[in-house]
Structure formats: C-alpha cells, structure tokens
Length: 325
Figure 1 (cartoon, helix red, strand yellow):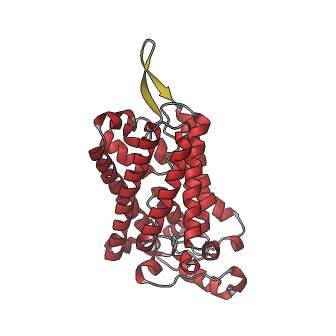
Figure 2 (cartoon, helix red, strand yellow):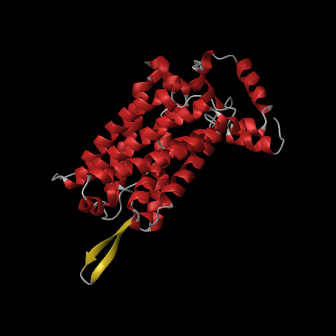
Figure 3 (spheres, one colour):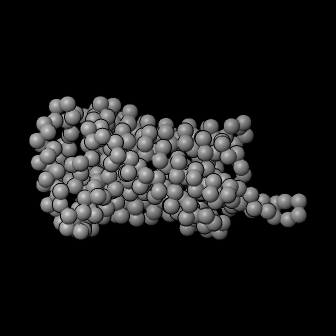
C-alpha cells in the first residue's frame, strides 16, 4: 500500500495516464536530474503552466465526476452526522460528531483517491494548484464539480429529513449566527465576523500543515502509506471540528467549515441566514492556502520537493511576464 501513496495529490499527467509518478528520497536523487527538470519547466508557456489543455481533456472531466460524487456523499454524510449527533441525547455531541466525521472523511478519501486524487474540497484543490501539483485549470474544474456535488448532497439530505429538523439545524450547513428567541423578541446569537474569519484561517492552515502536507511531500506519503496518510487527514479534520466547536461554545456558530463547497451546497438549498457571512468560509480558507504556499517557498528546498512542479504559482507568474531563471 505504501507504494501507492505517491498518487495522493500527485502530478496530474501521471494520474490520468497511469504513470508511476514515484519520487525517490532526496538522499538517493541525483542533483542533476532535479536541475534538468527545473530547466525544462522554465521553458513552458503560460498556457502550459496554467494547464489550459485540461479544459479540453475528457480524462480530466471524467476524473471530476469522482470529485462531484465524492462531494455529494461527503455533504450528505457530514450534514447528517451534524444533525443526528446534536439531535441525540448525549452529553458531548461535538465529540461524537468529530469522531464520526474523521471516519467518514477517511473512507471517502480512500474511495476517491484512485479516481481524481481525492480532493473533495476546494481548499485542497486550490492549495495543490498554488504549489503546482495540479494545474489551475484542473483545480477550477474540480472546484466547480465539488460545488455542484455539494448542492446535490444538500438536496438529497433535504429530501430525507423533515422540514422542522432542516430548519432547526440549518440543514447542517455553515453558520456564524442564527436568530433565537429572546426576552424582548428574536435576537441574533453567534460569533463576531472577525472571530469566525480568524478561526477559519487558522483551522484551514493547520489542516494543510498537519495533514495535507504529508500528501504533498511524496517522501512522507511513500514512507507512511496511503491508508495512514488519509487516516491522518481525517483525524486532523475531526480534531479541528471538535476544537472549533468547543472553544467558542456559542449557539449559532456551526464551527470552522474548512470546506467552502460544503457550506455553499447547504446555502444554495436552504438559503436564508446561511448566506449571512458566507464569504468567510471562502475568504478564510483562501488566505490559509496562500499562507501555506508562502511557507512552502520559505522552508529549505531539500525539505520539500516543490521546485520540479511545472504548475507552481511563481512559475506561472514568471512565465506571464516572460521571465526565466
């Protein structure tokens, strides 16, 4: 199983064409090969670096179907877990919810990885595009598929739960505030915008740093194995959900989303107050992705095999202005 771990978020051509995409540890990789690869990538055009051809690739669109279906199942399962745990009579519903979320995410990632690389989250797709593991064009296709899948998952959930439960729990969507009855009439309860934004940024960054990092670094992915890496991703997400819902402990705040598509699906289907502050669940993760990308450019290059990725964001910018190393 460890030999398959290099396919986690691996180079798109290797995934779609069936290539091995195996990266040897740096201790055994000749420096000349890395330099030759880097020189080859500096001569690529802007269109090649952006992966414009992916928009016309049937394989990429077929892979996006895995993202669409995976996102639909993810939204249906996660939102069902959110509703059922808080509806059940347990002392710590957020703990049970976090454990179940970790298990579901791990299983879904294992199911989707062989099809598309196992993103099912715009945070992963956008971050992978910045780092250069996939093209920005492919990331856009994936993110659109993820949003469509999230809408389908939310529609499926709405079809199986009562309208009362859907309204009470906001269809399991992402909320910052809710309208609650007060002594002098309805009042708005929840988190302030700044608090929610910072939580989204911090949790999304920790998610990338503590789990996806292992999939980005092919040496770690190969050493740990596919099941271990994806299990860690699920566990970290579950812990972040538990932390974000525990430290605030405020009614009306649904916790850090860390998946804009999931928040988007429920907002489209349920509407209403789910759109209040919805931008936070997009802006927060975007800032986290950029911060994580900056981190990968600051650390010593021998600790992260990023120089060879032809879709790297800085490479795209240099190519746009006709600059070459």
